[in-house]
Every structure is written in C-alpha cells, then in structure tokens.
Length: 145
Image 1 (tube, helix red, strand yellow):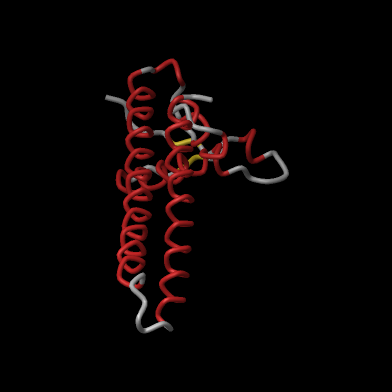
Image 2 (image 1 turned 90 degrees about the vertical axis):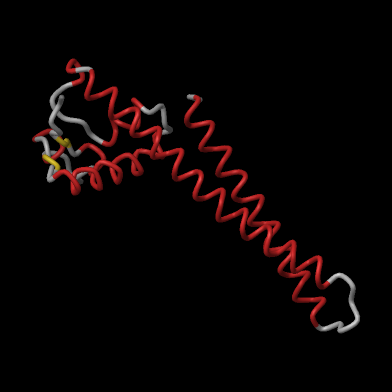
C-alpha cells in the first residue's frame, strides 16, 4: 500500500474509533442523566465533548492532508510534460499514491481547481464510447508554467 494511502487509512481508522468513543460516552451520559445523584455524569459529559471535538479535528486534518497530497501530485504533473496535456482524477490519484477508492477525491479536487481557474473537463472519445461515463477519467487541460 502506498505511503499516502496508508496515512489516509490511519486517519479513517482514528475517525471511526473516536466516533465509537463519542457514541459510547454519549450513551453513558444519557443513562446517567436519569440518576440525579450520579458522579459519572460530569466526566461522561466531558468525555463526550472531547471525543466529539477530536472526531471533528481528525476529519479536518484528513481533508487537509488529502488536499496537500493532491496539490503536490498536481505540481508534479505540471512539471512533467511527458505525462500528457491533460490530467484526470485517475492520473492525479495515481501520482498522489492514493488508493483507487480515493480517485473520486482527486476528481473533486480537479473540479474545484478547474472552477477557480476556468478550466472545464474534457471527455475523451475513449471514455465517451464506453457504456457508462467514468467521470474519474475526464481530462482537464490546465496551463503549464
């Protein structure tokens, strides 16, 4: 497994572990609310807030890490004219060393960048000829420096 894909997988595992902790502490907090004299209510509330905050932080950090990986891969594509005149989500994900399942994120990143720079996707005849249109193969012709 490529290094970048491993990093994103670790973020995903951390997210699910923290989300499970938040759900368990929320359930415990809900159960202790009925018992007015329980000493567990404040610690469970603090744990719930801490887990929820960590869930949000992990998701934000994962998004930042993915965008940085894709930015570096895009810069590598721009620097190497041998990679062709267009870049697709599939090529960008490969350059960023992401899993094939992460290709959608690369395409979304390209769509956002294209929208900011006024570059529209080009659908190649090979992709248009297939029965279904694979949007991850859309080519984007960004200017090279």
